[in-house]
Image (cartoon, rainbow, N blue to C red; front, side, top):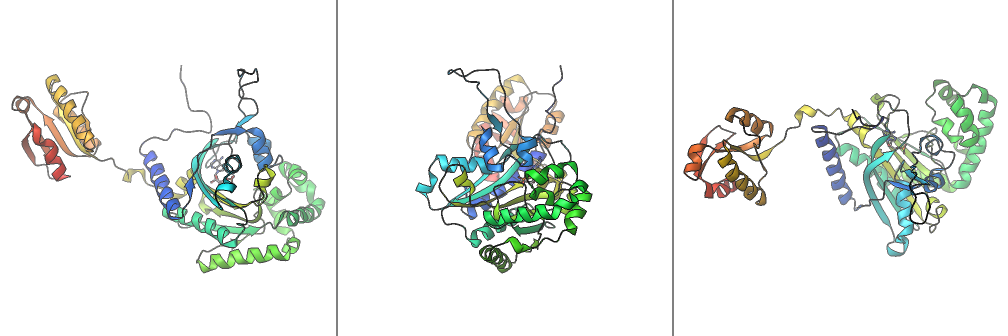
Length: 427
Ligand code: AMP
């Protein structure tokens, strides 16, 4: 019997895993600089939470939700996993947690970050998986609809990407305005698109009724041409919404953050209001978005919480790795010391020494499987050992070991009881 990873998922092995750890470590460092706290929510939640937050008409809810199913019943006779789905994104769960834990009563403003897997039933292709990983933030609190916070999260996303070594990404921003501006906008869009509806792709013909904004970011060439030919302008925006947008842009300019305005940037989820943004990386092809986000001032209330404002974003780790073209050959492992033992008597003492060194914080390993000195030296080299300790026959008789400095090839006999001290001085 042969098992393979499920379609659209992958194993992350050494050396690639080192790149993941570097990205996660850098992200954590920057989050602490920005004073954001980590939140970990379950990887599955009630399906309805996602339907209500992302919108029943969104592509994710319509086509990509991975629902859990099981014949098992709970103690109360209810099906165990019914009504639950793997999380397709992070925002809904963070908001659910914010509400459930009454955080609005405990702090004026909550600044969260998360790093973890998300799940969508997509057709897998380059940069598009069924299990992928996001680094995201959410800033939630009453009266926090401040253009400075929009600018903060945008600056934070740019800072993260820079810290991963990415340069040629493009920040696109737009505003959808308030909920009532958005309603006006969808009316205008429908009337502009109505005469051309039969020319749209099948998906967009459905989107026309369900979620007309999505037509604007359809990847189909004909739909794009139609969208480009539309006379879209900001006539639907209230004076306040325009002012808010202008302020965000002015602050971004103050910070020296380059951006492009894109009126066709709308984001597919219902919950966004006002600022939306996306960061694209050209050479990634059709899946070119490294990340995206925006403001969602009504979602917490719509999910049963207090009327508080919120803004956030999520970056996709797989796409960051594709864009970064990181060279796995530059990754090498290092340990302080590798212990080689030539015979079973030696193995016992070697194992005791190994544990003594480890409990003193020295990174080391042992050639458990024996074999010739040569083959164990190869293991030591592969492990990137700085020192090799050899338990040979002669050495054991005299309660000694040979220690080899792999930097200069020099060797030295020292007494077993002095090894720890010797290594501590050298390392
Ligand atoms: P979205 O919520 O769709 O805007 O996703 C935010 C970011 O997550 C995207 O810009 C991608 O970097 C990443 N992402 C979303 N869906 C996938 C997927 N199926 N596979 C890989 N990355 C994804």
